[in-house]
Image 1 (tube, rainbow, N blue to C red):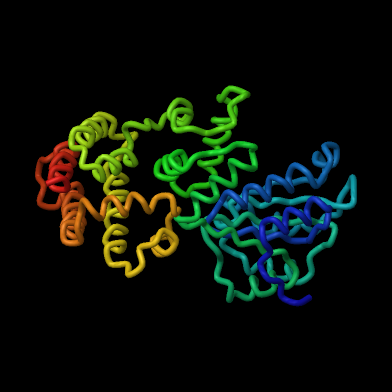
Image 2 (tube, helix red, strand yellow):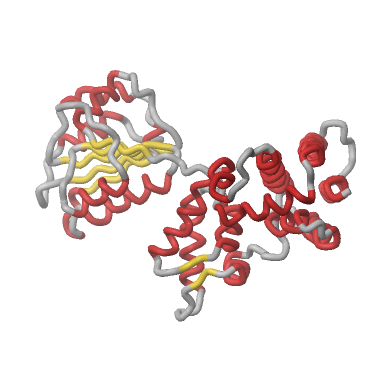
Length: 339
């Protein structure tokens, strides 16, 4: 058979729902969420409950011998027309070459699924070249930071919910681009919110996820844009008292990103909303923050702030700082930014 290109997530699930199966599925990539979704769908839906007892096998790459995988894959189903073998943590398998001959001639009644998370193998290897000829290859690519906001909005819509820009940004900043974590928190919101509520508000997030809308890096950033020294200092005092919930390394990273983007914004020849959003890779809604900040912090001041953040990060890591604690470091940084 000819070499197959990597299939899309939607197309793969569509084929599975139509019961159009392939003898081998190789699910790989940095984003574990889609790999889990596909393998869970196969595990839960391909075979009936009675068939699963005899014809479904779950193996783990850390412990399994390749001979066990091959022997299982070569068995014929006992109850129906297919058997399912799912190898989880397949990235921990070392002797892939031993599968070369099975990849050349897989048993059509077996659905063999490999879950290769957090990366991809060397695609130049003989075993992978042979795999591509007879397998469905799916590569799960981690979303970039600027893509997460749209993903959250679309995911909320798929659950018949709407979510405002501020709520989206709160989730982005505190949960990052880990889709599994984002989905888990969404499920928590869905379970705990009143049935009649269809809008995900900052208050709902604060109540059910534990993110304070008043004491987070998003609000700190807003306080700095507005030059609200009182609020900025209240927030960093809260950070100092809740270090686990607000690790300094993440706070510094977000401030560094914002002021680095602000420096780019200063030198954009076209600062219109659409162009600026494209250049900074942010939602157009947030361009107003950069417009306002650029009037408060000129290009020279912005460059100085970036230097202050770098110096604070170095001192936080122990460079030229024998004793100053996190709270005092943040207090010094905020003072330097605002003055």
